[in-house]
Length: 297
Image 1 (cartoon, rainbow, N blue to C red):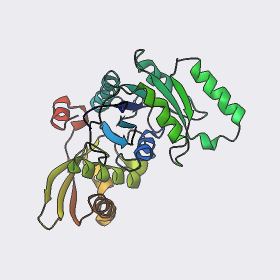
Image 2: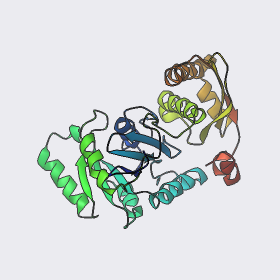
Image 3: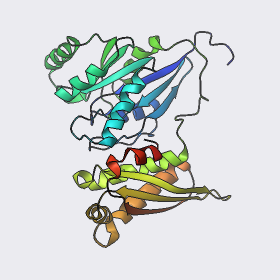
């Protein structure tokens, strides 16, 4: 396509406090799982670009970490900075809040919103509200605090209201030819997606036991001529006691995490995967800004 001819293409950032369903929303908007999800807050640590393409538009969604106000350290300060920096370089923003639950943390996120970028309010988990009048009053309260370009009630988990949400951001995308091929759903590398899959399993199987001072590092990623993917992953933690939690009794927990991660990778890469995961202790890494830069954070 050499001429836009009415076609639109642009960037839309998805923001909100932790655990309101931002990653689930993006996965359903693009129709494929590329951003990890968990009930534990702060699952997403990197900006993940998901790409939706149809005959009229291409939307590059930026899924950011939940804006963190409860746990302050160098990691979360850097993540919060990533969120606010990204807002100035997009064509539209989707602010995600949870239906009937608007907290001080939500207001903190709202205060970061720029005045010169259109913001669409997505009220997620709206299907859980059986009282329509109560939901309307809830939305009216939030609208009184910020001038939104549009408001859409959605259920990311069940795929409700997503077409309307997509249409609400379309007018704010500039006329442009698409930036990516139509069959491309993310600009992230296979290496990055592999690390995200491992992190998701860690979040899902450790729950509240999972330390916030934890990161996943791909130490080796090779694809053999046969298509076999050989992936070696190190999980970085802050203390020996955290290492024991991740490994579990007799190594059973880490084995389960590794097996489920491998199966997801085989589905994603459509090939056999050899996966080796182990745990490393690096004391104080979560507050070592130099080390964070080495990790690309």
